[in-house]
Image (cartoon, rainbow, N blue to C red):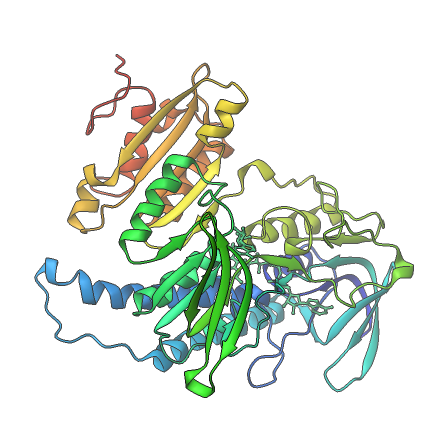
Length: 483
Ligand code: FAD
Ligand code: AMP
């Protein structure tokens, strides 16, 4: 294998592997470097998302949801299953199998598309040079017309609660518990904290989430955030807002080890003792030993590689995509950036629409949103028509006995153009996608209202919210009634 490439991608997470595959499809000779080693010390492709992120967390969310359903909801459907028990090691092993299947899948896609997967740590040593060091310390130099940095991100560790990978863990450790902790603390009520807290709460842990900020899910529409908090609390998650963690003490030995967390809330200093603690306070871009200073690639004060809207760095031959650059740390955002860079290298004019990056919290029910929320629009003085449709009025949601939540659709009062959609409810991620597509085509609420939706389907709630925005929903009373 010659060491000269059109494109060398560093990192094979969703941003990197998608960039590499698209480059190869466009006829570029492409290599993708990956340093990730699995439990068997083998190089695996797929990055955070496939190994310790999106996929394993959803595998455990789905397993724990089935357990909770069997325990609490089957009876209402007239199904009795006797004593429902959970085998945590089996659940974790299934999750690992899903991960193996998908990471092997990326390897297969590389072979099919003729991307050279290169094992080792990549370091940019020149504007067209990358040195790869493999796990045995052997080095090779790759020469590339273009370099795409897709090195991703890692969990943030905070001084009050240093991760010991046993009692105090990060998101990766929280995917590996071999038994259900009796008392589980989670620091951070962000997406990752809520998802992992939900997994273990459903399996029987008493979960307390400590969050420094006063507002729950601050990026989410307030009405939807409030409803989500209500539903999650009803499910047994204790979410303590305005609680800033300032210290921790480990005690005991072996299985009896505990951690006492110190935090401050409006009433002063507090402590709480847990059997396990998950630190989920965010992620930082990972650029450790990635770039030789002499190359001159600029980073911002938080360590993100600086890029423009097309993901070009200040060095003409070097691009950066995914979690290692500004913007939401989401797999789909990185994937689209990967495609954009590949296509721009092929002289296409591809853009990423950063105004339409959907966000989802995969709790049950899911919380999903796109575009602007009511508060943001009010703050800039845009008049809106708002339609809200509760799932309790959806025939399909009631038939499924899964009717928590609502769809909220916001349209411009003057033009009727959809400006945002916010959903808490079963399958919110998939329901929201209809509005993401509609907004990409600049649709109006009326466009959605005039579209025929299958009956009975959860998506009828999206239809009805759009009708409600213009005052003529059929299956609920309307805030404003119009002809
Ligand atoms: P990464 O996936 O982090 O991949 C970067 C890769 O680069 C890694 O494999 C790393 O080993 C490799 N690398 C780094 N430096 C080097 C080097 N010098 N040489 C060689 N290789 C290198 N996002 C969603 O959109 N939906 C979700 O549901 C979701 N759930 C999540 C759940 C959890 C628990 C976590 C932790 C994250 C979740 N995310 C989710 C976020 C998502 O995983 C990231 O946004 C996404 O993986 C970023 O992709 P990336 O390609 O930029 O980086
Ligand atoms: P996210 O960035 O969405 O993953 O969420 C991480 C959350 O952790 C944010 O909401 C932070 O406010 C919260 N957080 C960070 N540090 C602390 C701390 N010391 N105590 C409690 N919450 C924290």
